Every structure is written in C-alpha cells, then in structure tokens.
Image (spheres, rainbow, N blue to C red):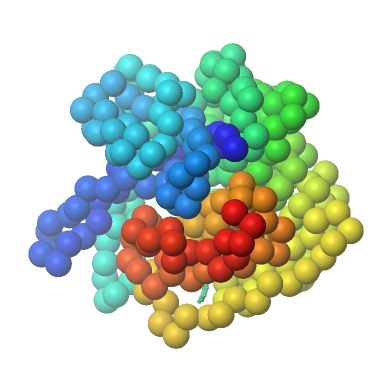
Length: 308
Ligand code: AMP
C-alpha cells in the first residue's frame, strides 16, 4: 500500500535536564503520523510531501525522514527559505510552545499544483490535516484541495484530521470554514472531540461524526481522549473503549500516533474496529512517554495481527 502524507515538519528544541540546554529533534503533526506509520508498516511505502530549504538544517531534517524509512522523493526545495522551528519550555512541569514558522518553506508546498499532483499520483491513501491547510497562505488552500479532489476521482482515498489550531488562522470563522471545505474532499475524517466541541459546539461525538458525514465523508473516527472512540462507516456505527493510563506523561502526538495506528490497520486489511483497537494500543503507549516520537517496538503495538 502506498501512502502520501502532506504537511509541515519542523525543527524541535526540547529542554534537557541541564538548564539552558536543548536537544534538537524534528516533528510536526502529519510528519509524526508518517513516522509512526513507517515503523508500523515496513512493507508499505510512506511518502512525505512537503517543502524544505536548501540549507544544512533542511538537509538534516530530510536525512532524518529518510533514516526513518520515509520516502522523501517528493520533498520540494524552496531555495530562499528554511524549515520552521518550535521550542518547548518547561515551567512547573507544564510544557508551553513557541513557534517560528511564519516564513517556513512548507508554506510553499502547494505553490506548484502540478508538482503536488505528481507527488500524490497513484497513492492508495493521501493524508493531510487542518495544520497542513492552516500553514498555507490562504490562496494556496484551494489549489491543494483541488489536487486532492482530482486524486480522489482517480481512486485515492483521502484521509483528513481537522487538528484545529486557531493560532494558525486569521479568524475562527476562516478556520471552521476551511475545515468543512476540506471535509468535502475527504473519505476518512479523524477528529478529536475536545477540539470539535470547542469550535463547532458539538454536543457529543455523534454530533461531530454527523457533521462530517453530512459534508461527504464516508468514514468518521472520533477520538475522545480516555473516553473511547466512536466510529461511523457507512451504516455501521461502533464504540471502541480506551483503557485509560494511570499516569499520563505527555499527550504530544497522541492523535497523530492514533491516526498512524488506524492507517496501519487498514494497510493490513483489518476491520475498522480492529484498526482502531490497534491505534488505541499505540497512542496509549505514546502518552506514557515524553516527546512526539516514541520508539516503541512495532511488535508490541498490535493486538490483532492475525489478519496481517
Ligand atoms: P485525543 O486526541 O486526546 O482524543 O487522543 C487520541 C488518542 O490517544 C485517544 O483516542 C486514545 O486512544 C489515546 N489516549 C489519549 N489519552 C489517553 C489516556 N489518558 N489513556 C489512554 N489512552 C489515551
């Protein structure tokens, strides 16, 4: 199975135990999903579609992707730019984030729609998020959706996580409007209920699922932290329970790893309920460790490998 994942990966500066010293890493919502997916499905091709600069740090990030088993042949180069950066600060055990991404190369990823069309051609599944859309200049969003619309017509399955991040958008209404437009080109939508209830006033996960089904999605998988997962696929509706962890260490990439778990299950031909159960196992492990990218052995991730 071939996956094309579109979005922004950034340099990450994370504090170490020594005050004033930081460790360099690379992460970003869609990239985190690509990273977990490549680990869970060594037989699948996972291609990351983005733009980077032509400087040293961009090269280091591309090497990091390649070393993780991710195909980088559709990483474009924007020669006068560099990658975005975020820094994590820790105060009294609470993490906060500062971002430098306003001019990042990834903002140019949809400048050339024909390059984007080539990048996703033939993919079985194409995945993007509300963050992918939010980092783009407003006049580049429709060209991206158009490429996805055409890829869908040509047979690709389009998967979308709304990942609502109001700071990336000029206004709340711009964000919610763009998210619902993105849903119209999507087959599978993977929202998180907490964000959706904040920005769309959904009363419960079923209301979130109904809204995306109404926009045209065929499958909606609503994450809801430790409170379980609701899925609706055609006329099938189900709930998958989550076994809450006693001590959450860091929820960074919980949703990103969950999405990778679902896609990995789909690639292995599992039912949606089995794929979601695997996704819960993966994200449950991830929230018990610090950082976005947690090195969990793939063998320990799957509860239902009989179908693989
Ligand atoms: P969220 O985006 O917060 O809904 O979380 C994504 C996924 O991470 C959830 O669907 C769960 O599978 C997993 N998860 C999040 N929080 C917990 C928790 N406290 N215990 C176990 N799993 C969790």
